Amino acid sequence: MNGRILGLALPNIVTNITVPLLGMVDMAIVGHLSGAHVSAIVVGSSIFNLIYWNFGFLRMGTSGLTAQAFGAERWNESLKTLIQACTIALAIALLIIVLQWPLAEASKVIFRSDPSNGPGVMDLALTYFFVRVWAAPATLGLYAIKGWFIGMQDSKTPMWIAIALNCVNILASLLFVMVFHWDIFGVALGTVIANYTGLALGLFFLHRKLHRDHNLSSFHFNLSTLSNALHWKDMRRFFKVNGDVFLRTVCLSAVFTFITAASGRISENIRAVDGILMMFFTLFSYIMDGFAYAGESLVGRHIGARQLRHLKLAVRLLIIWGLALTVLFTGLYAAFGNEFLHLFTDKQEVIATAGEYMTWVLVIPICGFAAFLFDGIFIGATATRTMRNAMFVATAAFFGLYYGLKWYAGAHTDSPTLSERTWNDILWTAFVTFLSLRGLIQALRVRKDIYGQVNG
Image (cartoon, rainbow, N blue to C red; front, side, top):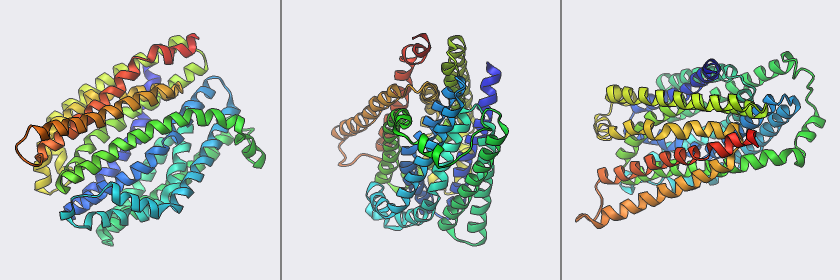
């Protein structure tokens, strides 16, 4: 079982590690331009996180439903799931493009910063937004295609797509910024070109699999198959599972968007600092998600095949791997955290301030590993209601703790305003509590919601 976990997890880790690597390269490119450019990339990326994370069900729901169909050898059902996900992805992407101006105006309100910093940061962020928004069809289409391949127990294909996409993105961004001097416009344009390159590769690999896999080779796409896949009876389960995932992701987006917005209200320097510190969280999360994706594949497969013993073994080993990675990353961040800061920016003020908050970086793996792993396990089991409810509780705790501690600190200080350090420590306290609660609540429901599907 360890071999199967690693066989699925390692390609997913390679896939996922390219995402924070890409963000790190973008941050490194603009980090040597100005602090405003760093903050603008943080804001611009947060705008798309707020938009795209809400539609993460296109990957997560697709992988869980497909994995269960794979385990039960219901090949037509797995293909229907792919068609449903791709059709919905295209519809949502077109809607995002049509609504880009209202979305931009809403972003100005959500991510407003200290007026003393002037309009420069938001102007740069919106330049990034209006270029990158045209990648929406490719971005969301890849969500669906990636989720389907993971559900089909194939993690290598998404890995090759992601490697190619991110290589194109990095090379294009370096060319446009360093050679053509297009600054933040060039970074965004590189992302657009890379996403459509990734979509083209995804469609190529999908076409090849449909013709080479003997279980799928009889499939022929036409208007009749599209109509059947989108029939309400077939769509109902897709929407039921993904409705819960959507609400769960809305809460996740709200928390991360609030963190960026709140840190900007403290100061633009703190927003840049928190954006860089979040890179440590992002790096850990994407590696942990490699094992979470393996959990989606294996848990869905064993539930579909009604294999309780294999299901329990997979869950137990995933948790052991998670604990091992937590120890590893905590040690790496403790030993080399300050060195990592210099990779992201050469602005000494940002580096010095970030160094004061490195304790929070050490806490992230400990508080966050269970949340990532159990997300994968519950997605594979399509036990999305528990995921949703855990997120509701954790989100309420985040906002309650943030505003409660902020009120308490304000009531017990002689200063009319909180210090930057106190205010930001409150924000990070709320965040690590949010991570911890998600993992704890789902851990308490494994026996009933995961094993119970096979026992019942």
